[in-house]
Image (cartoon, rainbow, N blue to C red; front, side, top):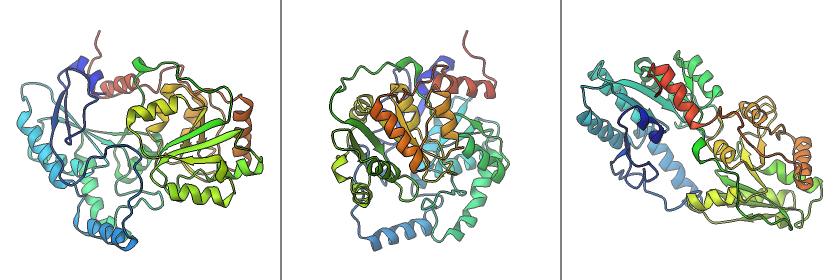
Length: 382
């Protein structure tokens, strides 16, 4: 959104060293090196091979010592640098974004010490202390979350505006903290949407691709594997390809349904290569729950796929927010059980799976900026 906001004033982006390269010309980028979090050379890197006990001990140590997280020192430096660079003669708006939640807590302290200096927008990419997804709780044991909850409550009480990336997430924040979140989906740049011209083979198996993170019990392609087995699909009809963090789990699920011959896993790739892969897929997969009543946070990946306008296979609840978005964009089918999984794979093989397209432009980043400016009472240009 940085480039879009340039139409309304000066924009400065603060980020860790090695990030921010995608910011357009005119956006000031200030890099504060983060000595704790290393920079990855590719996305969807392989899972850490650390011994389970060491991984458990590391998580326990972080849970006991890092409040809210291990980036607290980095967040403090970001906020301090921001304060030194502010022009107090203009209207300043500061947007902090999680899940590096210490950036919120440090901003809360700064705003409390410097009242009426800026308007603070606190943005949520993920839930903080009220995480409900299994396995994603941040504290060990979970009872420690109660000690951290007041930190988040103070942030909600202090921020001028809270934003969230989905209706479900906003509902939880509203109920738990009493704020009134504005929903701003991650969106896509409408100015960059193009019909995919990447070459796709008209013969051979349908290529179904997933690029993202696997969470056991939350994000899994197992339903698709089970459906492929039931339909007795062959490697001449379909190929499931994965670029993800947990190839071992993919192979375990494939072996469980005896579809190893339909599956390929690959090493991590850079962002540009990932974009070309989703453009040239016959269908891209979104994993957003494993049961009919699932309604997880709508991931940013959804809007990347919306922008390339290729067919989508989404595993999500039958009444989920994601399914409603899919229906708005021409994709009426969703997977939440074996029957729906079989139906969507049959449509793919037949070539009748529709493309995923936001014809009304309501999920673009341009639209999100418009909603943000409206809530902040900033007149749009022109």
